[in-house]
Structure formats: structure tokens, C-alpha cells
Image 1 (cartoon, rainbow, N blue to C red):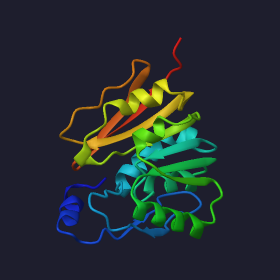
Image 2: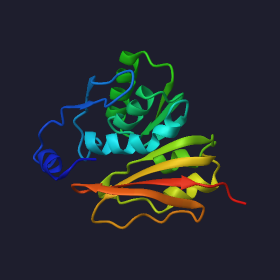
Image 3: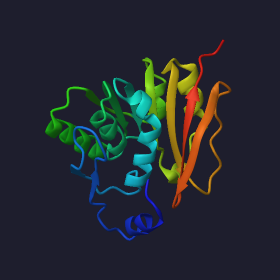
Image 4: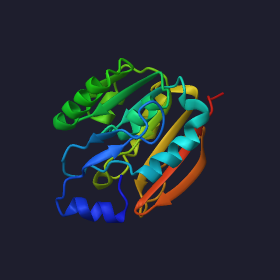
Length: 200
């Protein structure tokens, strides 16, 4: 995701540069962002707020970074002590960049899967404590995304789900047992933290 100024910069074709890890074992390190149409790395101020919200649960958590893109969200989770992060991304260049980045970090706690997010969720599930959702703005927020996460067994009993979407768009429909706990916006980005309670 980007704020308004950054978004117009990308639209003009300028290279997106690097993202910076905010906190944790790789604090302050910067990593390259592949130059791809529509790639919107989550800006520092949004990631900082998001991981302040997630701070009580991120250490030791098993995380799923769907629509991983540059990997900024998932790498931040690893830096802050996540036990494992699965990065899901469909673009081959972004996948190669992610694998190279994680090899540089010598991180054995990460897996990169090349797949469409919805197709991945139709596969064999595993329960995640934290899910990071940042779909491309141009595609809109897929209606089935949250439903598949909830009904297919991808979420731990009290999972946290971080969502980003275009500020001009409405909050995506959420399953009945998800509570929208926190919401903010920055520039053209709206972002939220949802809390899951296990169905009765």
C-alpha cells in the first residue's frame, strides 16, 4: 500500500525503491522492492500502527501473508518474532525477489508459495494465528477471501486478521464471528484489525 504521494510516484513509473523494517531483529534494514505494475508496499506509518496492534500476539505466532508483494508485512512479522510466515504471491518476479530476500536473511522460519491467493485458500488448510491481507487495489477486495479463511480452517481459534483496502471503498464483508477491533486510514489507504472468536 502507498499514500497518495507515493501512489502518484508509482503511476509515473518511478522505481519504488526499498522498504525499511520498523522494529525487531532486523530493525532499520532496507530491502529492495521489485518494480512491478500495481505493487504497493505498505508504508512505514501503516506497518508501525499495524504491528503495534499485533504486538501482544506476534511473538511466536504463525502468520500468513497473502498477496505478499514485496514481503514488507511478512518480513516485519518475522523481525518481531513470528515463529513462521508463509508468503503467498502469484507474480513470478515478486516470488523470486522474496526468495532472494529471505535467503539473504538466512530465515528458516519462512516459506514462499507462488499461487493465486484464492486458489491457495482452496488448498489444504493449516491454522494461522495472524493473517495479513493486502489485495491489489485495482482488483478490489475479493468477496470470497474472508469467507474462505473462516470456513476452510485457515484460522486459529482467536486469530487476528489485518486488512488493507482503498480508502474510497467500503470495509469488506466480514464473517459474523469476526469483530472489527481497530480501524484507521492514512492517505488513500484504510486499514483494520479484526479479531476472530471460535464459532460455537
